[in-house]
Image (tube, rainbow, N blue to C red; front, side):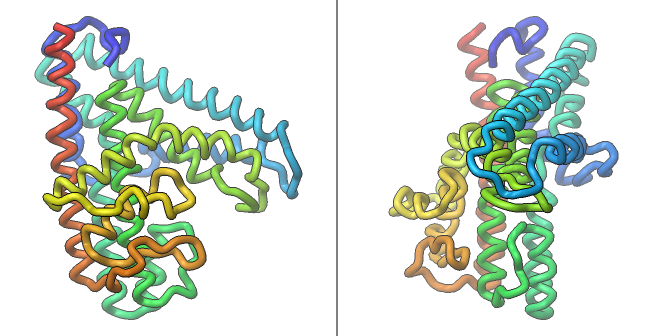
Length: 326
């Protein structure tokens, strides 16, 4: 982490920063998500929703550079606000809190930017709902994915839940920890802002009565850039959790439209030996078997082990950098 991110380089500060990710995951496991009115990602979403209503046109337009540059400017302005606000919070903690209190305070600030417990619970709930009925499974899956679930069969519902687990393992856990290790709390917040902006703006057509083909391009590409390395690290962590490398990973990962989401999803499909697909879009490990409830359980176990690895590796790397800079 650059020295300018810290108030004054010292081992206690580095130790507080290094301890924050595992402590944040512990807070997440114990208490889950904070109330929506206090959730910074909800605040980001509110700001993006307000801005989106002012930059995305109501009708289809061709080569709308005005919407593109307006969205790029708004994205950068909101990102700067998020980054500087979190830099200020981190600076206050590291300069004014005693060393023994700095780590838990940073963990509490980092926790809302992670969502492992919620992700685990939602995937588990889909499987439990599917055991009751197909309709219940479809309904519960709609809480987890943005696609239309009304026409999915039971197998596709399960496949979608496992895909979402793998993809959001990167977006909701590994990537925020990666950017925290690199740039501290501002880095993790910037990533979650970019990921939220992509989810709300990064659509190639009409959504919510507005046309996002051009207004959402900047947000989509920014998320691609910030997720590039974390997505591949997530695949590596899953392989380490399974204690074997998924053969043909790169070939399978390239089958998805996204340059990043295919990596954790393909790794999960190959490690489980199952087929994962989105009808009409892609099919990963097409020769694999159809997933069963046991595969959902195994996927959750692999993802949980990957989270533990991330919680251990990130502090070790941060302390290693601190030792090199000392």
